[in-house]
Length: 186
Image (cartoon, rainbow, N blue to C red):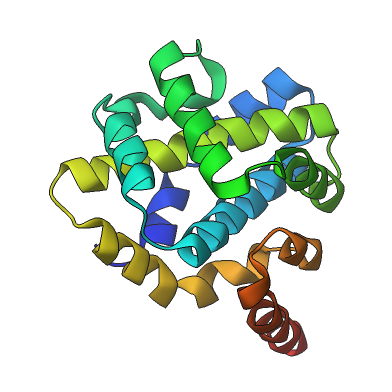
């Protein structure tokens, strides 16, 4: 179960970037940037929230759909209503009323439109719920997933813009900003 962040990124193939770029009418590099920022930011928020039985159930439900068998559908295919509901619950749990602000930060950081940033956030969160959910369905404990992501923070915090700290829980913002400052100096 090592390197969850890298495993998630392996699903973002050049084909996925091309499909998403074409469907949104955005530059491939900007789409790739938006996807990386979204993955990293959602993982950061998830690790800060920690364990929660409701979130675990949401992820397990999403994992039961075996969505990862065709990730192209996540980024360019039809929307599955059940998967969409799990995705909405996941985003609500992580962001509550900050979804618009979150999408706005993704848009400004990657230089894409806010409308397209919202679509990318939805698609990436579908990928994350499917990936993490399938890990849970396979028998991995939720606490182990959170611990692994916490250990990998240094690998994904680099992609998170400073503005995102306003959304990350206040108790972790200071540590988050300090770590981002030191990473920027390296």
